[in-house]
Length: 222
Image (cartoon, rainbow, N blue to C red; front, top):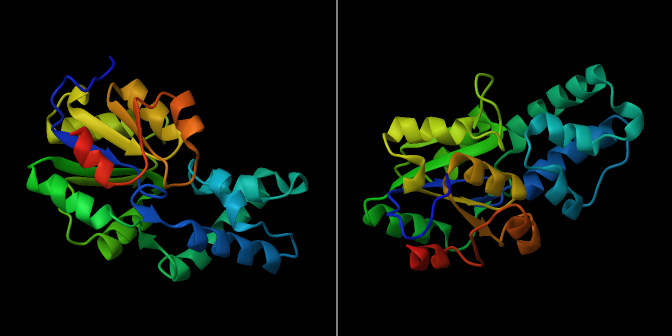
């Protein structure tokens, strides 16, 4: 089922990293510290725009050299990354300009708001609590063992059930092709954010029905 703008939007699901919060520097710095600490080469910040988006395990897999791709090594580096990121997740992370104002306006329209991220669930909740405390999100879901990660629509559909709304009543805002695929498969209206980690071309290629360049433009869509 494909949502359309002719249908009434009653709720908005947001991706977190690259959509609501600019988390890239903290993620990159943590992974690079782990790599350098183990005598491996690090990566420039922009490389992490394409490393992130599919969960912490995939982040580590992409950052490691091809010679270090066995599962035991990936798990060991993942554990080190989580330990480092647990101490440094809030150093440079900030909401993108215009995000708090956008959320306030959406809430004033009685729209229900939720977050769905491939970031581990505990870090997702920490980031939302720390950087977006004024927003009363109806649900904040990160990657959880019991739910397949995006682009599987399971998390988005779980939010729809929780809010007791049909998927077509949701607008889904994200910054990667994975987000657009998630929205499309879930039957939600897919909107791509170009201020995040990926270009507009990727968003459109993966099913974005609209692309916006600033958070304020979301208000105009509604």
